[in-house]
Image 1 (cartoon, protein in one colour):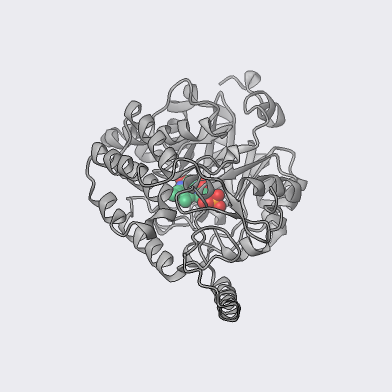
Image 2: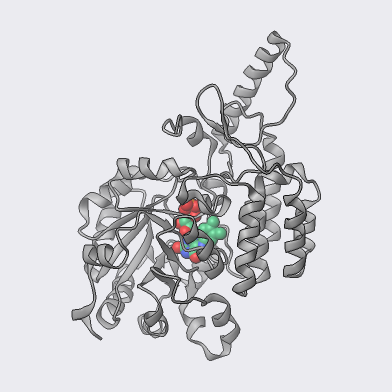
Length: 423
Ligand SMILES: Cc1cc2nc3c(=O)[nH]c(=O)nc-3n(C[C@H](O)[C@H](O)[C@H](O)COP(=O)(O)O)c2cc1C
């Protein structure tokens, strides 16, 4: 242990994380090394590994797991390695194995999945503050690098603040706050609570990272303004637009092929690659009826490359992003864009919007039949189709650790937001 030479709190944030604002979230099977290379190329300033199961990581009988979840190199920095655990000694053992190749070790306190309930980790430790204290404090006392944590909020802000302070007192040098409670997942995801994040930031002495509600680059600035946080983390926004941190929306084929090029250098699990391609190509899926099938059936890296290469030829080389009459950008379906998942309320709004449009179209005798898939406020989205696709995608892509942490992208939010206009 060398406590004296390890940076703490804002010194760590300044000197090691270089005051990062754009942070790639930990994502099981999705924030793997190859993806981190792509994300850094497009502006990610700090990256998290996928959550690693500390016990399996230390178990000699799980060599394959270790190989799959832990891959990095000297260019992959700053890097924070995330673990889930419920035993301080095992967590420490796992952390010691990686501490020479990363900048901090993070404890996952946010995973809300059944598997986390069964295994008693992630967000299910929220009820066991003593254990959390011990987990974090053991790393704080024994590692050469800082320990950090990623939490979900409680329904009551005062409890969230108390919880965050306990984690700070245990020795965490940075805290990421995902502004949703444990039950906000799947269809109950809803919006993240930035007000709670603001309150936590106000109360803590260590840097705070906000997580939730980031659909577009412009949301990052807005989140910092509203919450006062030091940096912003994106998971899904980055998966659907790997260039989100660079503030650009590039053609799907371009980013897909760039990612595949990286995978040629960095061996990556085929299931991870397939899942990435599904998401990058997401807006185009309704226009290529057999694409989902093709991706699902592709068993080799070469097959996936071939599909993506063939798609490339079908889209225009240059696309100028238009704006609609209210100032919102309209992304054609071959451009990377957020995946909009509707809440019940938003569905009603959308139906109302479509009904009004239909009426006005009838009045104007307009004949524009082109379906819009994008973020235009007048989008005549084929919502039901899109939703069905998302669901079946989730069904067919279950991994041993369920990755469907919660879809955060909602139309309501899109309607409410204002500062994407004219940006
Ligand atoms: C595919 C996927 C995998 C995820 N895996 C992890 C994980 O390993 N550890 C973690 O703390 N959160 C994980 N999450 C949650 C995200 O890090 C993030 O907290 C959540 O998606 C909200 O952020 P967003 O609105 O930017 O998507 C995952 C999310 C997704 C979509």
